[in-house]
Image 1 (cartoon, helix red, strand yellow):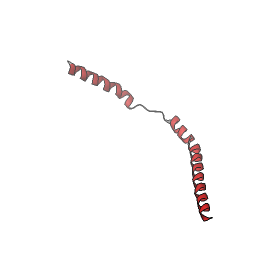
Image 2 (cartoon, rainbow, N blue to C red):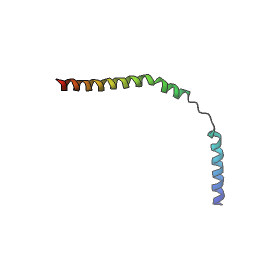
Image 3 (cartoon, one colour):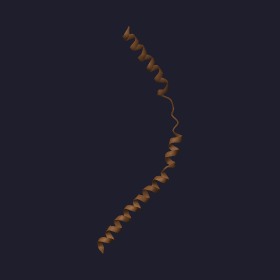
Length: 65
């Protein structure tokens, strides 16, 4: 009896998951947000790079004096 109940519940679970397995997911909003965030990320990365280069140049100039 218990084996039949387990088999029946497994069958019911698999039938419920079949419908959503091939559902199309709309990802346009996510890709739009990612592409929109590219400019601020590039600006922050550029600022960090400028700070690192400035610190390195400062060390080199200070060592030369």
